[in-house]
Length: 485
Ligand code: ADP
Image 1 (cartoon, rainbow, N blue to C red):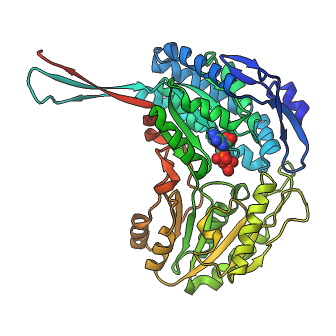
Image 2 (image 1 turned 60 degrees about the vertical axis):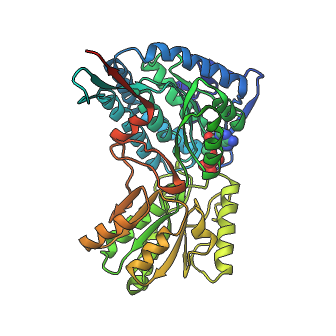
Image 3 (image 1 turned 60 degrees about the horizontal axis):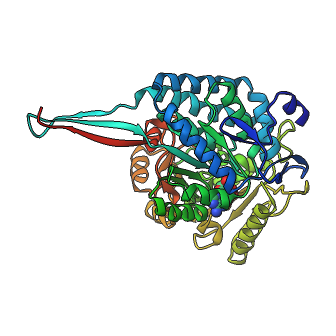
């Protein structure tokens, strides 16, 4: 597989600065490993402050030209990049499965999803409209311009190695910004391959730079730079808070997509097949490693037993294995620390009265494989309901009334995605409005799409990604007043 990727020119191991592939200046490297096998895929450049400084300078000088060409031209480059990603979708999916572990069919899904952001923002580039405001005096004319914010720093996580990059870089480039991307050190290869295709698409040298290595050194350099005018981040709430504090020094614009604690509420009046399908999809996608994965499944008492049995049957069918193998539904967790976190949460829950209904231990395949797990009699005070488990564990919480469900669902500092399953139209409206979440799935477990705004309430973040709102995060408003006309 690695040879195939190398021959396709998509196994890049150096950083990309100013359109040139470069090693770390001190020659340092880091290992990228396959989480399913522990095998070394390749070493990549391990960069830090110096490389980050150069990447920022190159983005700054390219900004002067990239922001001045027409939006139609920028749109064409993005569209070409989209076409190239789709043309190489099998190789890119292979790369994602190799370095991240998700099953190949999910990796292919991510390629389409990730590429769709480029297509969407190629179109949206042409629609960054300003305004003409009716003036308060007859001799005045008031205008609103929208201008690109400047150089953007983008820090991305490992769970969606392609999509979290295109969701940021697509709108940034469309708006006329240039970007320095720092992908996760666990999954830099997909980012580098995508950048190679951007170069092939004609995106000018310096418009997109990719550096990885020492996360806090690169992060600090981005934060301290007065040239970086915007920081966009997806990752943990803890790191997000640090970056938010660090942005204060230069008053950067920031967008943050942080952790969730998604409730998935199953009401008595639900269609059980729809609820099982939806909750299974949102819980076990990517081995439970997405920030919109159901973290708590709240089940109304009248349907608790029936739902639990049906859900259990569905979970038992999940096939665990190396994502490259045929028919696999669930791959490994990203690393040992992720498994230890799952173990800690389960231990806490069982010590407080939860019962393991299915799984609850490491998988016989070893490595970081974990059994698809269902635990019952969970309550909202357990660790597993306070924080994201980010693993294949479905905790079931019984509840009595709609009011109870809303109270439990909102009793958290997070507010990214929530799901409800009910056949009542009025309840759908009522509960959707009452949930303190940025995204609500009603009778639907898979809600992510490039055409809708993605983002959270409370500590789940700031700003929205995707949709017509997503590009607004990368423009400044300028009010221009013509007087004495
Ligand atoms: P996750 O739990 O998803 O790995 P992290 O927040 O640790 O979440 O990682 C998300 C991204 O943030 C990664 O690219 C990681 O390298 C980066 N990161 C981690 N620590 C810092 C930091 N101090 N400054 C800047 N980026 C960081």
